[in-house]
Image (cartoon, rainbow, N blue to C red; front, side):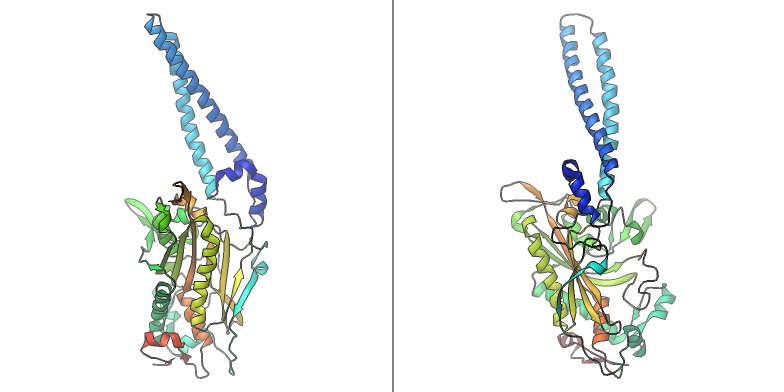
Length: 427
């Protein structure tokens, strides 16, 4: 959520920044609400002053034995107007909060200006795509050929955009998450967290999914309790650990890693990536979250992105880092890097991790603060990124490490997790 002072002090400058995201700021609505708020607050203050003055007169009149009834009637009238004003002011503040809740985060000054993914800027590349001396297959054909990836049965059980993985391939999927967790906790200084897969609306509001993106979520209705939602990412429960908290400065940075399934309805993605595991309703992800002081968030963003990159490098998967332009960033982000892994069957780089700095946008929604060295409270900065998406990493390994006979070579770094297994083939 934005600091309302940005709108009160320079709404035109804010509108220009948000326009680079393709968002049109409704200045008229804010100015109408703000004008009524000011009028109400001024009138309320005047009424309170008048009531206090008249109340003193009542005391003086009674002290002299004089009739105070006419003045008491004036006080009663003022009380009624004050109560009505307080009700309206409360409603008005709720309208302002609802207005603010739908405003996206302005892009950081270093974000490239653009309208779509075509305007994203490549920052770096790592690794050289392998040259295959045979016609490469995509992960769907590879998995079905070895009998360990079954989309038809998953569709029978549930529906489209689900997968059933079996045998050595399922084992590889499992150990990928273990390898990522071990690396992030053992080498990068993160603390592992096991978090709920269901969250309440307050948590989703805090990280920015609600109210704007409810259609992207799976909602669980309950007869006598508030609804819960399946998590779209571990970002939601892990970041909300600090909701409503005031951390000590010495507790920062807070670095957390969490492996969970993720659930997304993929509303608005009809017809996109319908084949295979690239875009599914259920998928596993290892999520990195950092909670830091404001002055540390830019450096933390580079660090966190580097941690995700190291997983790709250890797996020997070619990738590139891309800075998302202003028009392609997520609602809550101030700056985002996407990591895109090479998929030979698509002859393209595809997203495998998105690493974002939200600055104080989420913290303001969550009222997550810390006490600085001067003893004053300040809003935290929050960051997160995939370290990595497990299913997409499996896809990348299958396609990059495929052999002419349809088998898949296991990356060297994963072999100790698989009892020395070097190849995945037909059982």
